[in-house]
Length: 388
Image 1 (cartoon, one colour):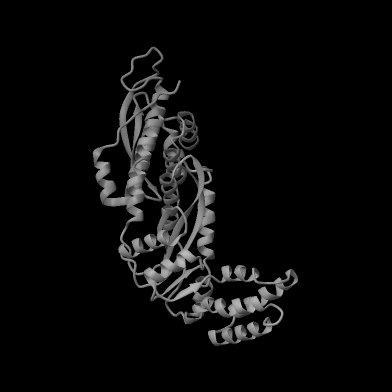
Image 2 (cartoon, rainbow, N blue to C red):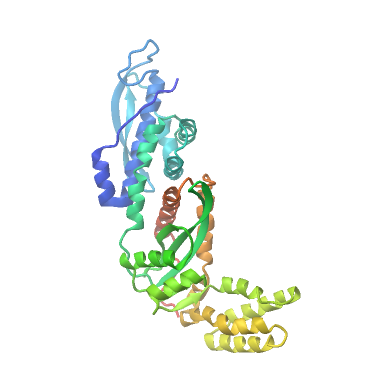
């Protein structure tokens, strides 16, 4: 017999969401784990609160506060007590061990509107006890406000900006479409990486990238010394419109891939790749341009289209030479953002096809917000002091 334990969120929580943003995650975890512990006590007593049954095995005896340290700060839980003793809820320890998964599971449950059966299965796995799906979805709905606060937070100065997109399958208007997830990653003046923004858009056309970049600017993004991205037409046009005066580093990895489309024979691919790599790995820009001129001349006869393409495009991948040697490998590609995309897909794979774009944005934001927090509290990405 499983006893449901419905609860309502206090009005104060809504005010905390508006004022504190992601800080309210600790309150969300507290509410859900408290609900799980109450349900576990009902299971132990064989009776719900104030319920009179012949099966009752004892009586509730209030709550005892217990403060635990978590990744989102110290949280004080209300541990249910019974009069005869001998009861300690396992949901507390299990819930804390899985707090990260719990937060994402709540988002996933709310996103999909999953069945009561699936909600129970997930909460049983995380906390060792079932709680009502209505209680879980009610608590999870608070993520909307928290994540909106995170996406709209004020920004400051970020010397380096990386822009990239990937695609998710989303059901819209009765059909499954591939929507673009636009992502901006910045490096703080302290050398830490931070995810600055995310948007789910119909495509990577200029109108969508432009709206996204303008939103970053409106939130206070400044101090950018270099933008690194690929050469997608929509992104290029939007970048020039919003940040036209800023230096741009075209992703060298994408340049390598693009070049292969101009190689006339397969047996030339390895040689061409090596020649381009030699340019990118030159010790300085002057040397790189010398290598580029030689390579353009080398392929004028055997691969004229490749030679013309190199003359028009490769130099866009050399902007990073204006920065210290220690930074170049980190600035010359969007590989770091590509790895971020793979991590988001891995951690959000519980959803194969999102039911709508809002649900996609919700779950992706939850994952990105957590990763960004880990970056800001983790190792330094770039050490500016003493860089040459």
